[in-house]
Image (cartoon, rainbow, N blue to C red; front, side, top):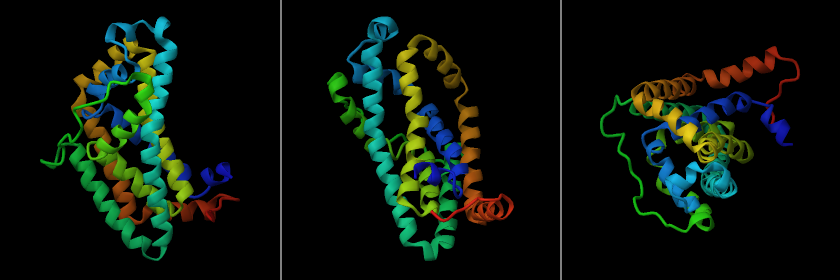
Length: 247
């Protein structure tokens, strides 16, 4: 059933966007500079111990997965909610899609730094230090506390979840977003030294990364506002044999 849901409708094309949005959220100034600190909190290891991959691989891997699972619960719940609301308000979906599209465009412009005041980093500064045992709770706190901070990418994904008008599709879309956001956390833990060097390039080119990411969000917003997102689905249904959008 999951395979059928993924291969039908616009979800097939929304999934890569959701993954890219999650990756962009990780690379944002809200998350990336704090990622090593979070790894330290969720594993109970110092920076030097994190660099000792061989000796701490299991602990780092488990802590990272539990942390990702924690914030995934929050974001997937959002996806289920938005998908369910989309199904309930299907009659008004065209109008709401356009409103959400405008919101996503504004968020994209803010992500690019073109709207002053919308780039505030609202986040928690006091974190529990329970190590691996507290990793799932810390992940939940991350999902709740960082939602305003990574709002532009999250808003885009939840807008797409709404257009899918299905709780299941909304959950799948949000899960892929969490994979884009969570996979770098896991890789950073397992390849701490190498990833640290690679991500330093991102920190030195934040403006470029933010502008590219913001442009991606604006494009998604334009597709929603103009109705081209839905038109694309209709075109696929007419053009490709066996393409369905029933679920």
